[in-house]
Image 1 (cartoon, rainbow, N blue to C red):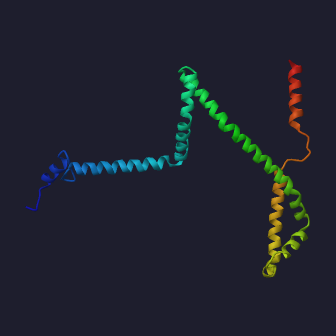
Image 2: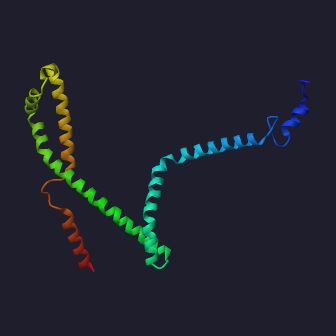
Image 3: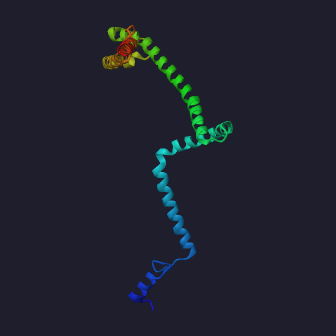
Length: 194
């Protein structure tokens, strides 16, 4: 009885509702379906993972801007396209304008720090003895004294590259602005040629 013929086995495999010769019960179907849904969900999350923050922020901004959209929809008498454009322009103005102000203030502060630090870095680069006298004032200098030469070489390299970077990146202090003279000459050329 333990021996089955190949025809019987083949008929069991090809019979509808069977998997691997075992009948497909509702429980097995649900387990297989759950496994398939889980695998597809994991693949989907892996695919959209780089965009999750963007999707979350879009959902937050949508939720925050919807009451504004509803209020403007009443004011524009149900014109949805015009209301959508007005809402977009309003929100961009409310978000972008303060962002530009903050970025401008940060850039201005960075320029001020560069102008403040540049003379001091230039002095340290020009007078290496200044750094040596500052090192002697550090507590525990006697422990690092054997490495003094290496420290001075590395500090000099660091200060030199930092000073060169800052000098190369910062604009000249009292350089004439070419853009204003260029634009005025360009405008006068256009006006005179017409």
